[in-house]
Length: 332
Image (cartoon, rainbow, N blue to C red; front, side):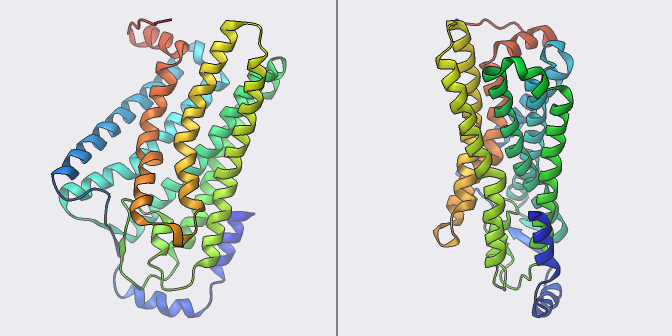
């Protein structure tokens, strides 16, 4: 319904915007990404660090997907969801970092109109889908700990598949609506986007028409796909912590607290910067701050997820030993 409303707004924009669109079409078809890094030795050092993080994210998430696919002991709803999270993280970081690195090394910061739309679409799809998937993972832990007898029914294979397909589908539809609308806004000012990727709020600053309606839709979309899921995750883990506190088994409490802490770490690193960035009014935002916050959910989180879920999970470490032949010495 919300995505349909965005498309409705796009189709029925005022006719006067067509004049601006025609003027824009005769000027340029490209945008310019101003980037994240300064053009000096500090920028080179930071780029090397980002490339290292990118490499670790690729290796870590690819290893998690392969591990969960190969080891039968990890063929459970929790790890099935985790494999999808790793896939989303792979696509998420691949959407922004390669282009940013190419622009810095080549000195060519231009991006085509179509390329900007494609980048924006994949970024928004991964952002929305991952937010919904993290909510499903929180629900999985809630049912497993608070209602263990109902777990085989509530988190059956069929339900797990529906959850994943729903996350991808809703994320894609919402992203398509935002991307289509953003690309049909008349741009008649500077074509320089003060960001390191085609972020829709940064693009809106270049529009030569009033975008308050669309900015309101961005606020609503962020609430639906990020804020409300974050509240749901917090409520789920609140119930889980209460149940864990009343457990008689000390080993069970430790295992549950370990699982919860890993999930909460991922949630905080992902949701907090995202929600803070997109729910602030335009007059309280600054391009420099937005770019720094974007580093958390576009670069750091995709790298941290496989590390957090593997180094703090004995089942994953055991699977690494069986699949990759790596021996880990676990300290109790």
